[in-house]
Structures are given as structure tokens and as C-alpha cells.
Image (cartoon, rainbow over all chains, first blue to last red; front, top):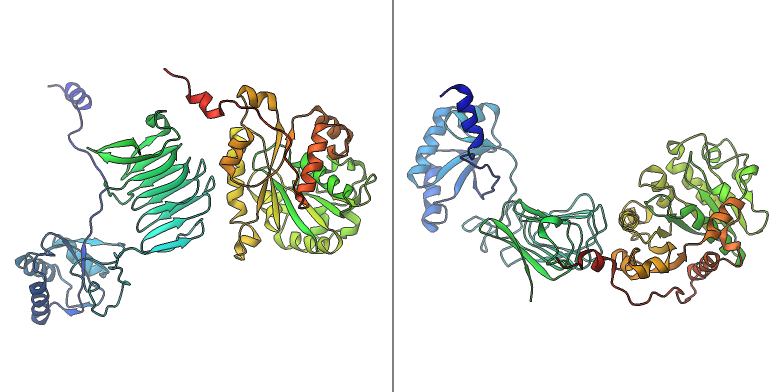
Length: 265
Length: 271
């Protein structure tokens, strides 16, 4: 095959892969002190209490208060020890430059950012144990009443409730749950939620649900006039949605990787 | 203690300056000491609409920068003794407005007048922001037309966040809708948004419906606020709006007959 033929054949065939952003929940282990025998003993005790909870979770070690982990050999050893306990270590956090380099050599990813979840099953926050860190929210989600938020949304555990009309140009972001608007949403406004979006009024702007990649998120509204709706990154503009459901009570959800709009009875 | 009202819209050319002049004149005719301030620095119109452009010596910007006293800049209306105009500069631009300077002028005016009407420029940047910042109430001027409605919605959002009242946690500056250039015939035909459509989208109380009227252009050319025109329908509508502004309940006079709504006309055609 000549080069031009090869190029033509590549450009006219379908790409063999798709790239998507997808978020997963990792379990973070904050190592306090060295990864010595005492550590592994304590870890084994903990694992005995909840043997299956962690087996498929990606593990991340927070090195902030760790001691004695400096060379790639240390990290390789850590990976091996944890793997023997059926824990898959994938990355590290809050390490120094040297630690990060060493970790990389051992096949671990230095990660930044990440947001703590309210509670993870098997973590130290759940149950009645005294905890430091996150405020436990295991009793279920608490609604938070709020005035319309403009620029900086506060960290809320649970549902963000908006009771005033969302005006054109305003952006509302529910960063840890559902977004409920008991009013209308103006053309040119944006609703963004990690969870579901409910609009008990006319939805005229944009609604983006499941923005952290949750394909089960849904959008509900009393009157669909949206400019754009999206769930977990898959979107449809007003044009794509068409006129059949205009101004009706609908729900939108993903079915077989396609965005479906359905009238609510 | 004066009430400060901003006349704003977002969209340009919908009737802010005309309405400021008309509402100001109406309030003065009703016995209230009123001052109208032009915030459209560099593109001033209020002085022309008020008919005092030939008497401007000092302006709002001069007062802000300490180059003149407020008394020197205020122009008393020759026809209505309760009415005064604070014109703005034509040679400078909006950067000449400073928050402290505007605040000082507003404080001085508050002692002397019952109503301060701020004629906002179009847009949502500095001039419009200054005009609405110190307001107690807002009159949102809107044409029954989709882009004007959307821009007014944007402005309502700003009234609830970028004003002194909102920043101090006293709530949004409450807005009332003034629907201008309303043409009942076009509404019946379905070309123009109906009052209810606009109210449904903006969800604020209705101050008044000003009909499209040739008297508005005439008044602007004559330099006479249209509220002073005894015969014009627009003038009458403005005078009604003034009554409502002062707290009276007056029925809105323009009624639309039954017709398919604007959106039904667009999407209602079957394939």
C-alpha cells in the first residue's frame, strides 16, 4: 500500500476508540507514620471487620503524614503488600516531589484534588464512631433552603433548593446532589447539578445533570422550553429535542447511551 | 427621605429615557418633588427629552469630580416647579462615574427631593451598574419582543445581586414591569408578545402598558415629556403608571382579545 492509500484508508474508517471523562470513587488511606509492621497489623484488623468492601475499589494513599516512604522501592513494596491483601493501590496524594517521582516509577499516579464524599461504606465516618473530617450524612440527605446563588455556590450536603426565578445569565451549580427549582428558569440561565435536576416551572435555559459522569441522573420539568439539556455529558439542543414535547411536563434520561425525552403522565 | 428608582432595561432603545422623563413629569404634576438623573455618560439624551439641553452649564460628572456644586448642575424645569434635571457629560464616558462620587450626590439629593429617578444607559456594564446600585426600586422597561424580554430578565438577575441592597443582604431591588411600544393590533395578529406572555417569563408586577404612539416622537422632538401631553394615549398610560408607582391600584386599560399565543403560532403548524 502506498502512503497515500494508507492515509486514505485510515481517514475513511471509523475510529477504533472513544475517549470519555468518567469519575470513579476512590478510597483514600491517610498513612500516619511509617508503613511498618504495626501499620499492616492495624490494616489487617480493619480489613477483618469489612472484608469485602474494599476489594474492587481503587486505593489512594495520602502521604501528608506518612513517614519513611521516599524511594520507588518503598512504593513497590507498598503496592505488593496491599495487593496481597486484595487492595488495588492506584495512586498517591499530598506527597513531596521526590515521593511523587518515586511513586510514578513504581507505577502509581500522583493525584491532586478530589473531594471527600459524605460517607463511604466501611470508612471511619459511617456508624457511631467519633470522626474527624467530614460531617457524616448517613441519615439521608438533608434539604438545604437557599436564596438563588449567583457566583460562588457553598458546599452543600444534599439538595440545593432554589425558590426564586433563575434569571437569564445566572448560573446555579449543585455540586453534591440534586437541584430543585420551585420557579422558572430564564432563557440564557444555566442549571448544573451533580445529581438530578427538577424544575417545578418553565425550563427555558440550559440544564446539565449528572455532570460528574452519573448516567442515572435525570432532568424533570413542568414545562420544557430548554435551550439545551445534558446528562453526563450527552446533550441535545432545543432543535434536536424538537417540538413534540414543547411546554410539556417531561423527564429526560439516558437509555442505551442516548438522551431520551419522555412526557410525564 | 427620597425614594430612588432606577429605570433600566438591558436592551437599548426600548423607552428608558422617554419613560424617565414621563414618569418624572407625572410625579411632579402629582405634587412630588422629583429629580431625574442621566447616567448615560457620553451619550446623554435626558436633557434633550426634557427640553433643557440649551441650559446645561455643569453636569453630573462635574459634581462627582468636585468641579461644581450640585446646585449649579441641577436644572429646574420651566414648566413644572417640582421637577429638576441633573444632566450628564457628553464629552466624558462611563469611566468618569465613581461609586463614592455617585453615592455622595445621591445623599445630597435625598434630603431635597421626594423621588430620584435614575435613567440607566442600555447594557449591563458600568453605567447601568452605577444607575441601579443605589436604587430602592426598579422600573424595568421592556418591549413586547423576545430579545427585549430576555435582556430584561438578565437585568432582573443583576438587580438581585449587584446592588447595594442585595450586597447588604436586604434582598433584591424589587422590579416592576413597564411594557412599552405595545401595539394591540399586532398582538391580536400574533406578531407581538402578549402582556401575559411577558409577565409569565419575567414574573414581576406590572406597572403599566404604554401603547405605541406617534405622540412619543413628537414629544421627544419638542423636548416635552409625553406625560404632559393631555390627549395622547401614551401620555395617559404614563400618568396611570405614575399613580401605580405612588401606590394606587388602577386597572390596566389595554385588554387583549382571545388569540393563539405567540409560541403556539411558531410551533403550532402541523407538518
